[in-house]
Image (cartoon, rainbow, N blue to C red; front, side, top):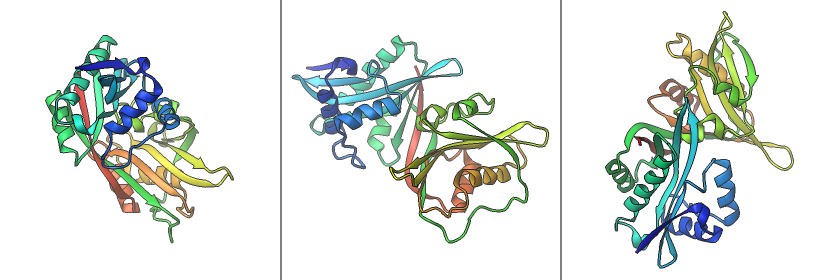
Amino acid sequence: MIKIKKLIDCTLAEAVTAWNTGFEGYYFDATTTPQNFIKRMVNEDLSPSLSIVAFEDKQPIGIVLNGVREVKGKKITWNGGTGVAKEYRSKGVGKILIDSSFSILKEEGIEIATLEAISDNTKAISLYKKMGYVVDDNLEYLILNGKLPQNPIKDSNRNYNFKRVVPQQIGQLPFYKAMSPWQTQWQSAKNGEGIIVKDDNDNEVGYAYYHKLFNSQGNHISTTLFQCEVKPDQTDAVKIIYFLLSQVFGDFNDDINRTVPNLPINKSEKTLIVLKQIGFQIKAQQVYMIKEL
């Protein structure tokens, strides 16, 4: 008989076992360690009291990690991973996990559930659709690594007024895309930097926020761009995007890794077009799914 326990009531060893067996044979190596499991729970705002583990005969056989944030007065949750041990797959355990998860989330007053799924993972997507999720957008994970021979940023022939801010300030903008995928929200840009562009009338018309990573010697090794967006109906949107990206990535003369995670291809279409014109390539594709609870 399958028993469901909240993650907070499980040992760390049980949680790690549930994760590693649940994601055995996944599309990429998702294996974790106790230290990395804890680190991810903290970094991605995952909740031990909202996450669950499935057991059979005291053996962990499945897991769902959930996090919760408040967006415009509503509690929003994110499914940070649903995994079932190989020998228990296609036996209804996934449905039991998601149903149990929904019950806990509803008790906490959460109104909207979100998740991302690998586009090729048709079995998981089919299950999520049966559980009431709908595809809100398709996502692309983009990369551009290394030093480039020349700067790919177009010269817009205009220097916009801008100010440097922290990502939290961008979250207050009226056109901030709060319902973007979890890992692109300002809360995920821990220790990040932000830029807000203003027009000639001092109106805020665009923003970007990102995080630069340095190694132990102080060398810049990577930049992750979380969001780069422009106020709707802005006629010079493309020029603003190019300007923002020039501020984030500089002249592309650094030998670093550049990452843009989970960019919505419809809701961030202009940004996507510009990034691909610059030379960013697709590393992975996902679907972004939403369900009202």
